[in-house]
Image (cartoon, rainbow, N blue to C red; front, side, top):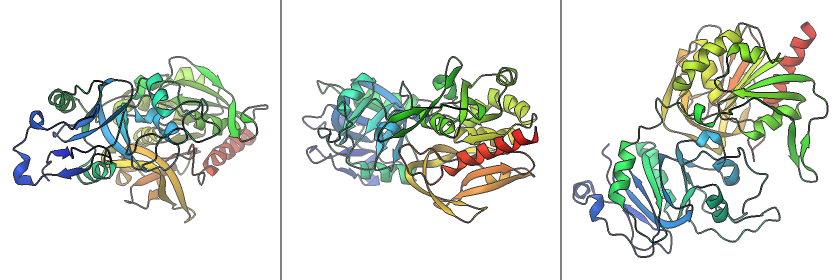
Length: 418
């Protein structure tokens, strides 16, 4: 299907409506001939020449990445700080982003790795008792570029129909936007396929984690008595995953994605956790898969989430591939094939395990009810399992929290057998 350039309406007051030009006209206007509306201070330019005008938010400058969309209605701060969004420009389909402000608790990593943020409506003043900062000011503090006033429905339809494009997001306070060069930057960017981004977001040093989940009355807690010791391999771990492990009585040691099997085993773990993360699992797997294969031979319980699920599949002999547009949102139905139950899940991934490539002895346990793609697996003769989605689901839903208990049950069984 040909990719036809899109130009925004000159009016940005109601959100910069977009309209696709007929195919016969698509070849006529180059980006240099697009008429920039008055008052715009930001643009999103796709590699095919599509231009979305708007009002700039956050930091000024330019940033290039893959443009994706997220359908969650809450949790924008957790989404923006999820390390799995490294290399991506996030489009929020829900129009009211920023309405509850930002705070120091709802973050998933100290340094966000996303490339930019695209929203529909201007940000209102925060209306929440936990808010300490306006989203615009917080984006500035994190050196993140945002654009408001974009017809996110049109952009989402474009991604749905043609796949996730490469784009350049730009914010210039003086309105001096060079869309020609932005298109060139987007077109020249290598894309996520074949890119190892876990190496960019992983921890640089080993550390301990004992913070537990948040409660309305007390905030975050602290692990008081550990039942097990888990080593978490950080491919881009969300903080709330580590909190969920600690809340189940696990003392967690977090190690780098490049940690060797000997370095991991030197920590004397009772089990291994494989975290979420960004990029192409095959690229990260170049160094992660040999390490994991050694660990699998030790008989330790292993639990993987998202990128960790994909790398586990690769270590077991399966294959992964890039998706047309990926799964991102807090409302994805997943069926547990072992129980028949359907969970509403939180997801963020652009690559997927090829279920047809799972080897003998490895069972598919979960599937997406959107497109029947793989969402989970387990090894039949070992205490090893993983899921594609996010059971920690900060800020929600919480249908899949049972998976952390399932992992701890495996740790308990191993402790009894020893």
